Image 1 (tube, rainbow, N blue to C red):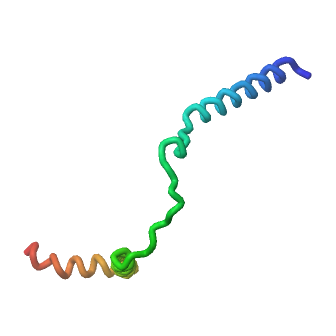
Image 2 (image 1 turned 180 degrees about the vertical axis):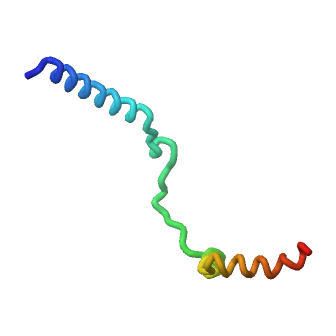
Image 3 (image 1 turned 135 degrees about the vertical axis):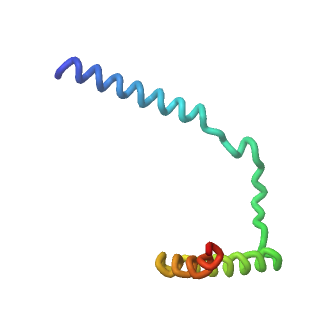
Length: 85
């Protein structure tokens, strides 16, 4: 085999090992900082109302998005054309 290819392969392996070591050094174990209780919060009435209101707002926003560009500008000019004169 060519010596340059072997050197390149060895260098690449060393770089990959260094990269794995740096990744491991920069990784934070959250279990060391936070305690997991194992409990899950249930759905309260307030949270259910929040989800319902949020769903309604998202549906309303999606309905506004369906308007095509031409219709949007047509309405815009109808509303603001009178104010420019």
